[in-house]
Length: 342
Ligand code: NAD
Ligand code: TYD
Image 1 (cartoon, helix red, strand yellow):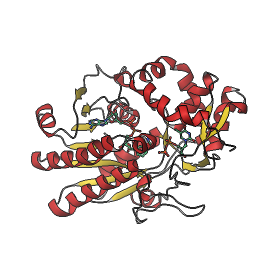
Image 2 (tube, rainbow, N blue to C red):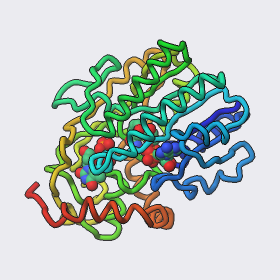
Image 3 (cartoon, rainbow, N blue to C red):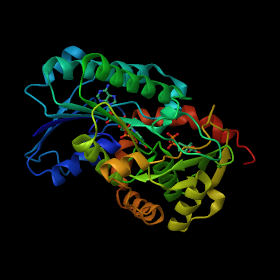
Image 4 (cartoon, protein in one colour):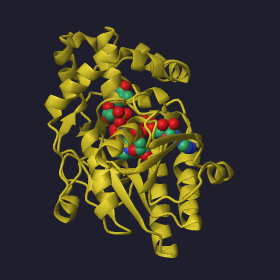
């Protein structure tokens, strides 16, 4: 087997490439990534020279470059490549339209024109929009994205499904809840809070911290993606969730407790515009059809994740240099000067 992974220098993609090399001992993995601010070869340091791993730098929305960069046949294609941070999409959605929508279509077309095998498109529960206090997302929940990020992911999902119906392409989609674990870019809630707490910096909690996310360990997500790619029904969508709903404030307090840091570090700041209240996945379909279920315990593995960031400061410092600093200053600068009561 020879497989293509796009976005394999990002958080989930790098965990997935590492997982594939270990779990599928006879697979060759071509890892294609643009290396945006969120993609870092530092996240692949231990496997860059692996004999079954080849890294290629390219943009999935650049058709000419993609055609030139990719030679030979692929039995499976995994598309992780995307702009992934909601706050950035609020600040400027342009890159999201290019990478998440144009990029997805460019890849879909290439798969068809070159006769590659199945395309697994990695999507998110955020395409369903927000839940109220009750209920769960199923695969039949309406697509009602709120943020530009979620809207761009929803557009890509629809293009992938259209390719299946119009051209008979072999595709599957996974929609997963919020991931945590090693190598997550420290702009997302859990790594940001861990690193700020380690440095005794303010922990900027949006609004009152009551928003709920359904946390899944990245290893459970990776296992789910491989299960769906190998055994899923062509043209289908599979929801993957962690069965671990937690309010943001609960997560932040657990991080502080693990690090033995005071709750006075928590700063309630101006809320994110149109902040989705709650996400929660009903994974019944994938459990019944493919036997996948999340295995990780949130409290145990959140503590392990906190320790990972504490022990990998060098990685965090390196990926946080450069462009990331500018975004942090423009996004949080005003918020932290304008704290709310919480
Ligand atoms: P990430 O931001 O950490 O990584 C994205 C990677 O894609 C980076 O390495 C980046 O360089 C690369 N990339 C961006 N634009 C590209 C382009 N045009 N061409 C090639 N490479 C490009 O994101 P992540 O958290 O690892 O998410 C990976 C995928 O999983 C995304 O599609 C995201 O929507 C989806 N997802 C993420 C979560 C989550 O909690 N993080 C949950 C559900 C689904
Ligand atoms: P995030 O990690 O950005 O993921 P998503 O918005 O895709 O779910 O945010 C997770 C939750 O944490 C979300 O409710 C927003 C909140 N949050 C904060 O309170 N403060 C922050 O600085 C960040 C980045 C997120």
